Length: 79
Image (tube, rainbow, N blue to C red; front, side):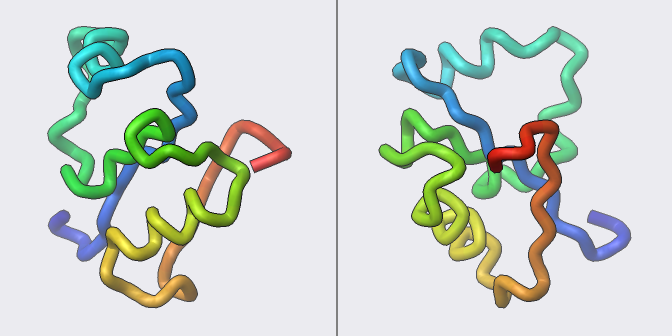
């Protein structure tokens, strides 16, 4: 991004089998292009869901940065 931030999506998508199926659920005006493509992570693709540590480790690994430089924001207190 212009500010030097990577923006991703980390979503639990149990029951949805393909990326196309998941993306089809988004509103047509959803700004997917604002997100770093390799940081759009779906639990159904990874094989593990939040709040499992393995999910977050995978997300951090995808950034190729230290975990200390990552921030996760959620609307779920359990995440």
